[in-house]
Length: 123
Image (cartoon, rainbow, N blue to C red; front, side):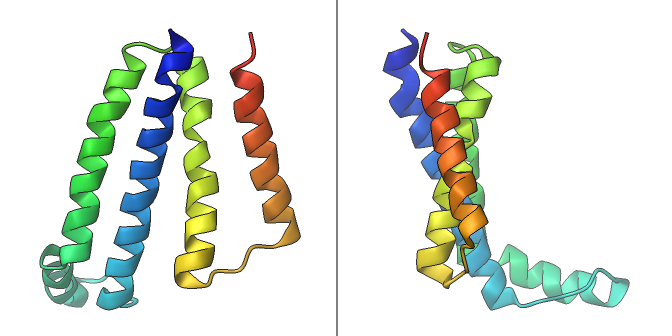
């Protein structure tokens, strides 16, 4: 039964990644800010009215609903580490979409995560 749910776990990781990358795109439009009382209203309004940020939040909600479905069927000791594939998807997505740098150590870390996911599926 667990193997049948691997695509659902991967889907939740992909949705989580999509939400993160869309939120990043939205925050690039909002711009860098600091937390202080003067910024609360102007930055808050930019965030609230950002289609990217609102889309990212909706995707997070869908991802959360699917994740709850996963947790109802898979032990958390397996599901949560498998969900770490989102780290891999985020790093690769950020590299291609935002031109973020991936060091050799980060690439090795990505392969370690993939290997860990593989090992978790072996019984």
